[in-house]
Length: 267
Image (tube, rainbow, N blue to C red; front, side, top):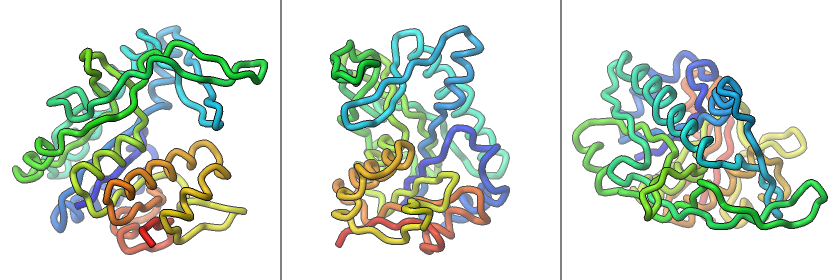
């Protein structure tokens, strides 16, 4: 079984062969899709006159600051427009997909971060209210397996539910890692717009888990989260994590065949 993370602007950025490739993969092994959509959320925030706010953690990770209003927009765009557009596209191509957010059937549970430590404009550490950002604690793997047994393909938006039943924003890459880990996927695949991890403009074809952990702090922000998610998935028992380009032909089967992508595996 494979868990695949795709971006939110799916239709624009994927090779036309992707959907057929997903279909072929579903026929040979179970597939769970997790999607993102940060750019679309930012766009809709601006349309609604809500300026998106980003914060930087002490370790240099940039993330969206999610207040209540942003969380509402986030839920609307992620679990509404993006999720259903992906489901519609899959259905149109004969894949019986089911769209879910992490809130449905508690597919993704998370703890609300009470405080966030950020680096402020003056370059100093500062504690601010955590807003509606979550740290994933659990995945309803039993329910997801049930759907797969029924021949359904789950499409999950990264909105989690808190203990107080609030909507929480969780990172899409890490949501995919947790889903893969808890459901017991053999592989987790992060589809992106480059061939994989590039160091000095060269593609890194293979990394062990230990190497990936060591190299992570030296990587730029977008890819850093994917490497973090990959290491988390492997720590939870996933056999291999793949980072691959969605803009080439048959991106899923190419990645599974280790063709021109980054493969992270245990020693």
